Image 1 (cartoon, rainbow, N blue to C red):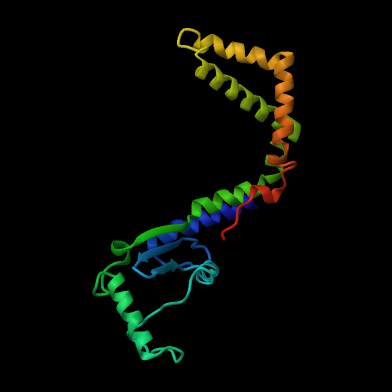
Image 2: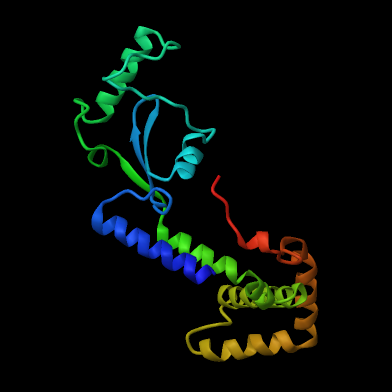
Length: 212
């Protein structure tokens, strides 16, 4: 099923690119044009998909600030406020309001269809990914050993015990240290120190990310 879905997305988006015809349900492209000003940043949203457009437009960090020269001003705005909007948009768009947004501001691509397709494929494999993540004890051992190795290496460099002449053999020395009674104790202590920093058990939601 997911293979069919991703292939249909690819086909329909290829047709959008080649023909220029709108297909809002399949067109997941979503771009913002950021137009910085002294006291505010104006934002233009370019997105044909209704759900994506609403999600971006309703973001709590954004406030509607539209202006149109072919309509009457909204009843809840004063003449001064409406005129200020006209001035701001004209200024942001090159002083005349006729410049292309891309030449006046920064374009940010929020959604790329290839990324969405990859996400769909990843969703299908969540269980397999979770099965490949080592148990907490294994991850702790690996991380603690790596941290102890780094500490010993830095200690050797700082003290002058590790030089260009014994650089290669120092790797063996550190490996032997980790296998020694003293090294095993050091790793065990480090494991107890960092245990609270690692995720005990990964779940599907830990592999996901959400647009905020």
